[in-house]
Amino acid sequence: MAVTQSGKPGLFTRVSFGIGGAADGIKNNGFDYALLFFYSNIMGVDAGLVGVALLMALVIDAVSDPVVGYWSDNMRTRFGRRHPFMYAALIPTAVTYFLTWNPPEGMTGNDLFPWLVATTILVRLSFTFYDVPSSALSAELTSDYDERTSLMSLRYFFGWFGGLTIQILLFRFLLVPTEEIPVGVFNIDGWKTYGTIAAVCIFTCVAICALGTHSHIPNLKAAPPARNLTLGKIFSEIFETISNPSFRALFIATLCGLIATGISATLNQYINTIFWEFDNTQIANLTMGVYISAILALIIAPLVGKTFGKKRGAMTIGALAFTIAPLPVFLRLFGLLPPNGSDELFLFIISITIFDLSLIIATQMLLGSMVADIVEDSELQTGRRSEGIFFAGISFIRKLSQGAGVITASMVLAVAGLSQGGGVDAATPEEIRMLGWGYGLTLITAWTLMLICISFYRISRESHADNLEKLKLRQAEQDAG
Image 1 (cartoon, rainbow, N blue to C red):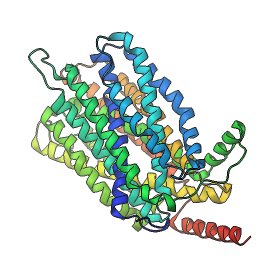
Image 2: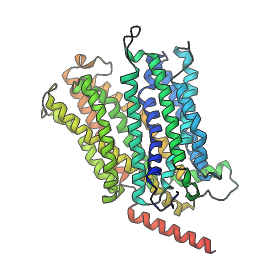
Image 3: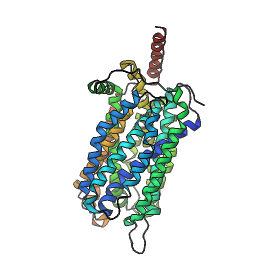
Image 4: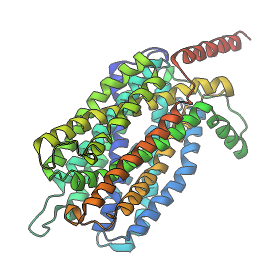
């Protein structure tokens, strides 16, 4: 049964919306951590060409994301504004992801470049048609300040859970060595099976999200009346919408935060193996700890948002998280931790990592919910509901910032003298020390800039309630007139 927009969506709706985030988690993990390795090291495509393919897809995203967002804001059908896009993306998202990991038999090396370009662009484009409209539903399923936090918390939880689960499946159970292939990562059949399983999971998650929220279509916001629109008018309205000060603050904050995430994701491999000298079992246990972090974040984010408000809550737990993250590295640099190889050190690091990551995920959840609250603030200024454009902007900045963190991490490795690899045996004590300082200082810098940007966000619980009341009065005046 559908509920009013200001009400509380039922558990089935909330979980269905949240599961939709798993599709993004699966796709993002594949593209962020495996695509370059698969096509360059396994299939023999020049790594530079893989980067070119990803860049070409990003250029397409720069146009498609805002266009799809604007289009879904103005779509007029009996199935509402968002769901036609979600249903249209259902099959393409799964098929194109499957094809990405199942290239034509007998084609290897740079001959695969056109295939890679085509599938990469099609995957990103089809996900845009799904992700932007489905994410925008968070601002339509409810206008309640705290319920939006709950919705986005579930979305991020399933994103982390789904992405991690498929990643573990790939590297622990599919990429297994055989008599002919002694090194498991070169097991092409394992990669192909991964592509099939991931595609099926993506299809299922998209379908659950679309069907699970379908009953709410009659109560979702309707599209504006039909207008004569030119291309210039469309882009004029897009730029007017994204000029909202709170959106600009979150846009740049998201960029800085994701650069920090990219730095951490890239350098953690070096920190774990070279700085801490953890073995494969310990690293696997750290990875499994992400499940606990995601569960803790699902509890922390709604509680903190309700107690302190989203902006203050995000800044508070964000500052705590980003202080804790590099703390063990700094403690080691000053000789204040047990030696490498000791059980005490690993217990300390895994405990800190699980807790700290839960705070980082909770911060992401609160920031996602803050985007939804911009919708009514912008509607008062422009007279238009623009959920699609706002979530399209955040979607694009996520894609744009993925490479920036990796580039920054590469610079840290170059300065430390570790860019040529070789592991802990090839690293000198000074190089390891430089790695630790570079890791800690770049993270603190990126996260500090993120928190500064969040401070310019203007919407509080009280101002959101005031926006809703003003919109209600405006609608009553329009109905009376």
